[in-house]
Image (tube, rainbow, N blue to C red; front, side, top):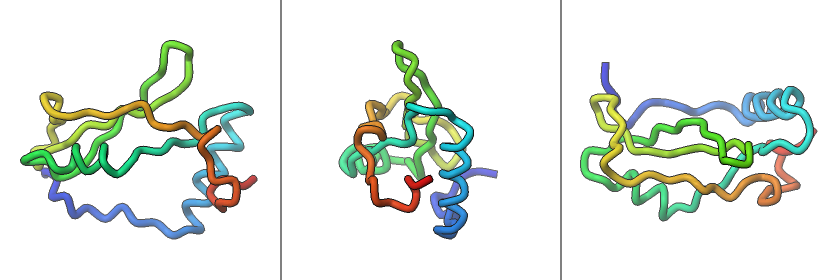
Length: 105
């Protein structure tokens, strides 16, 4: 089938609120709710020749905290593991928008 880079991933804010609320409700206390990646890291991955998007993998730090690993993906749906990868997101908490509807119970 292949990736084009133009896949539609849009959802409504209402759906996003439901998804994040479901996660928080079912994950218990003191969990990582999300993370932040700066635009330079994302642009560097996307800017690689042949990259049409970013694939993420769920990972786990040695202390047990969850993380995401980002890697570029090409049109053939292949990970571009020979290129740039990213992790070390700034986790939420503590880097959260406490006023966001995506972070409210």
